[in-house]
Length: 479
Image 1 (spheres, rainbow, N blue to C red):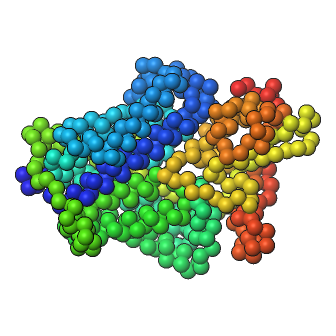
Image 2: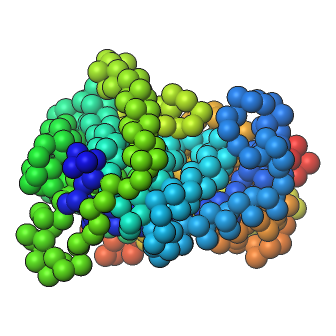
Image 3: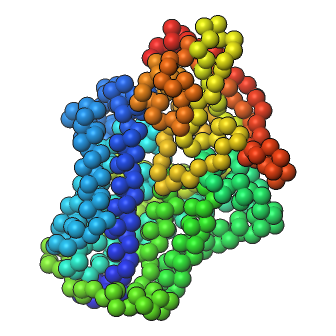
């Protein structure tokens, strides 16, 4: 069945399987390092309380059967080990059902986490990772050729990501339409990276060219992914180049890395060897379609994909387009998009504590791992890792009431000098000693100029705007 077996896409399968497995490994490492202080039994938003409140509405999750912090650790380590085996290509050496089962385990375990993750897992790239893992289960093993229907499903997923992002921009903030969005974006994005300061200071005419090029890649190029080769590979190369640019200019967890990987679904072996002839001897692979059961299973997946495509397709055409939406509890067939609006100014919440019993002096700042804090601290590269607490702090500074409940619990943990919570931070100014008071103030941040960077060695300039939480003691909080 020549229509079924994609004999020219062995590189695509290699990159997709191992790359998506790498993203799952990163995600499960974050579960091991962050889940307990954020969502555990004594977390900021405890899962047991959440499940008591919402019950079956949480969706499929192993934690409805039983929750314990120990079970989270088991889940996380199983996810890490299975993902690592897929990166090494071990399940791929067996029949197709082996990598199918391995990716099925990753999907099921991570779905269990996302469905109880509340605001800390309320990001579009969680659904994107789940969808990618679901599709990767159907890519087969080294015994069979990659199924072309699965590669088409990957391209449809990439289309939704790119075209959805392009349309939400055109329907949203005027700065995307007048090409001025990057006058602000690099400075106000949630998690600036080490090069973001330099991107911000590029000439403004170049920023306008960047935005125009982004519109072309997101609004035109996605349609080319479905055309014959070499057009599809060229379109994929443009997406890959754009995503690499975004990786360099900011920290968006695994969104850009995963989108880059999805683009390989349109890269043909012949087109790749035309550019890199030395790869020709290693790109050969099987031409077999596999057993009948495998063909039927892939056909069922394709039919499910078509059915699930209806709602996101309608969303793309709707004037009230949703930016990131899941239409079922399995997080399949979702809608995507990012930055329909761009903030013009950057506010940051600065958390401080003191051991002074009167709270009059000795205030020292808690330093977060990724978000801006001390003005002389060069922004870090953290993506594709996801610092969930730091992202929550960005939304908190925007005035999100959904973040405030967990933030008060966070302040309570700081007053306790809770070790698990403090491990989420880059620096505890009290080295494990309990502060007597904590407070939170909102500062307006802007990037320093070239002259200020040279003279003061500061990447940011900040000034206080308001008090978010007045000086507070443990007796003032119910934690």
